[in-house]
Amino acid sequence: MDVLLVGGSGFIGQHLSAELDDRGHDVTALSRDPDPGELPDSVETTMGDVTAYDSIVSAFDGQDAVVNLVALSPLFEPKGGNEMHDRVHRGGTENCIQAAEEHGVDRFVQLSALGADPDGPTHYIRSKGRAEQAVVDSSLDAVVFQPSVVFGDGGEFVSFTKRLKKLFAPGLPLYPLPGGGKKTRFQPVWVGDLVGMLADSLEDDNHVGEIYEIGGPEVLTLREITEMVYEAEGKSMRIVGLPMGLAGVGLKTLGVVPGFPMGGDQYRSLNFDNTTADNDVEAFGVDTAQMMTLGAYLGVE
Ligand SMILES: NC(=O)c1ccc[n+]([C@@H]2O[C@H](COP(=O)([O-])OP(=O)(O)OC[C@H]3O[C@@H](n4cnc5c(N)ncnc54)[C@H](OP(=O)(O)O)[C@@H]3O)[C@@H](O)[C@H]2O)c1
Image (tube, helix red, strand yellow):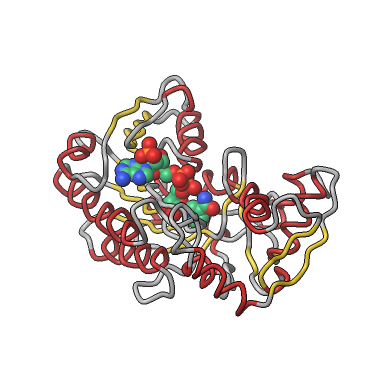
């Protein structure tokens, strides 16, 4: 199968490229500046920007399937401001849909996010919801994935916990987390488990039309995750609680400081869980008991 991975040079795209390559598919990775050195030798790369239709449309020619993995991180405010979420996620997805329809692509897989909602509380969540809606409304044979946070080699989730420390308490022997890190819960999924399911969704017609919520094998608070990350380095860190209201004022205030990478959206995202009560991994014959835990990945179990 010829598969175009839009955003294929990123974290999940690199792992998915390797998985599809191993399964014998012909993969092309498209992004604004793909680095062939980070992808398997047989994966082709092509340059394009999803916000500019003419720069991507020719890459869809001759493809059997497309996976849209283009992302702006929800963890930091994008360069160009929060409006970029709508431009890249919704606008970029609509351009991919149009190009796929124009070239008669058989299968379209959309990487969305848990909680994606056109009326949701953050720019990221709203733009992901609107992008997802455009995919569902299209004429394509589509499959939508809504994963919780994804961890693995090359991912930013684990290092994010340490970056927060550098931003808020550089050099101090303590870590002030909003709400003590006990309020927000995640269900981290290992990238190696996720890409197997993504590849299956391309190969098996039974997945067409489905929207899958994907979580890992355990639910963890931000505090538990942070403690594990430091434990994996043989360090202990004293986590202290920062009242949620104070954290909100702080992030909203700092968000207007040029160059500060977080703002109100990041605070709002700490107010809702990133978990699923309806984990769809079983649709791929996956048993959560066999999935990689964050602790096992970090070597602290
Ligand atoms: N990682 C997670 O924890 C997680 C959790 C839930 C959902 N997801 C979703 O999974 C998907 C993949 O995430 P990821 O972690 O792999 O993201 P990532 O590492 O940030 O990769 C994003 C990719 O998109 C490309 N890109 C960005 N802007 C572009 C543009 N305007 N035109 C073309 N390409 C562009 C980037 O390459 P260039 O910079 O070279 O353009 C890169 O290849 C996203 O849809 C994300 O929302 C991820």
